[in-house]
Length: 380
Image 1 (cartoon, helix red, strand yellow):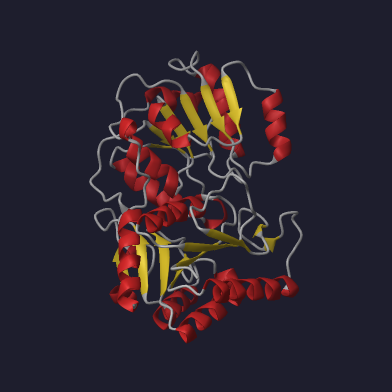
Image 2 (tube, rainbow, N blue to C red; image 1 turned 180 degrees about the horizontal axis):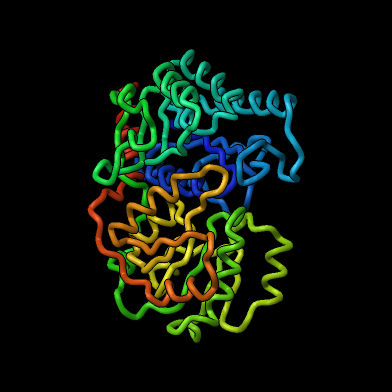
């Protein structure tokens, strides 16, 4: 038996897992036990911060446009896989017998998994288990209004609460979801889910930082940015003699990783994964990355000068939209991959400045855990 069962499904990057792991850690600090049902491709470097992890039959997206689901080897998945997944998920729910069900994104994302999540919701309702949705501040905008209406209707039918991991001082959920007002009574803003730094890094230094840290999230996308960054070092006036650490990510294609590593110039170190990534960022002179939610939170917490190139393929809009606001606020330097060259990237890195402070809540994990703990106590 667990206090909380958490459902998380990563398809391309690992940002959803990282955010949920911070929430799970905060739930653990509240004394709650956690079972995670994970549907993404397993990786030894992923830490869910849970008491138990149930690995469902894994899948990933077939491409950056999220056009379909495939197994870890790239084979298409069909009805038999769906039946297996649904059976596994419902069995995990029955086995963990949770006091609360915490769902990442759905119904505001992960629509392709409604074949298993609607039955899970039905099982939770029958058992009297409250259902809470954990969702980031911005959604990918839907061209078909009927999909947004479906999200609203599903939320109204099944959810007891919607925890939006953002701060209204920056923007509200209605910025990217047209029907937010229809479910306003369900919505609570938790603040952003950002890491808590160790004491020696809680006051980020403004001087004494060294080197450039380049990262591409989970690594399923971002190869172009990494290649540009490797070439940019030779064109940098300020950091051409500094060490550049390149973090490809656990899902960066193995053949490309080995090819890059065999061709690296002196002064550049290629990593698959850095367990102390956040601490490295706190000591780096400049961070270069895409503009995912978690990387932005790392930048805000460490106050590292940052150059960001948002992922915008397949209709993805949330990275660009959030990054544009923070760029206007002077928090990051924002670039577009189209037309970007090694020379222009080097110039932006050389000119990166320490970000200005921004007054938004960054204690979203702790506030989320408190809300869930109170909900469970209220059920007792």
